[in-house]
Image 1 (cartoon, helix red, strand yellow):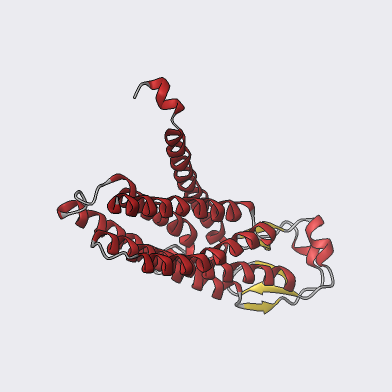
Image 2 (cartoon, one colour):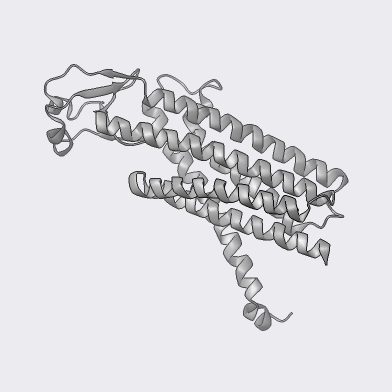
Length: 274
């Protein structure tokens, strides 16, 4: 195919768009890691060790592990043929996938730990919140974003019951703490949902490689994944309303990315039945 005709090929631009989404997700992982670093500096006292590593960097670890897993699905469903997926290549991909699942499961545990952190509250006995302006105390802007207390921030908080995250210098009104709690729970629901999604996809890939993926199973999986993707879409909408833009954008990009994987599986099955 000539260079001119290649640029006129819709499939060429489809691949460019698809891999651009993958690149954006990789960049999202880096942004989440930076956000984790900033947040953990305030929520974790002392040094970061292997014991609290996942608590500190759960979002970054989770996103980057998912990117690798996404690329492995792309290789298996769109790049390598069934004949290629044997021997050392098969075991290499399986080993990498196993490592990703360990890290993703570890991150899920980290989300659960983070939920425990933001719900472990105590009342702060203080009459003048504005006296904390310029101190090391911060307030809950949203989950993982703890901002300095300024004169503009403290004025609306005056006279309201103030709560403090145990073991930290992070404070907030009950409304702010409830927001952090709801967002932390959304992280847990979203992570659990994605784990089920990839379990279903793994089953489809295995069945396809072993010529056992029947039309009935495809229909059943389609119904199950419709429910799972609906939950993920609901999480994305909630992040768009009460979360920050990065959470919403990341959730949207992941839904688009896995639509590509679904299309790969559909085309892969069509080719084997042709």
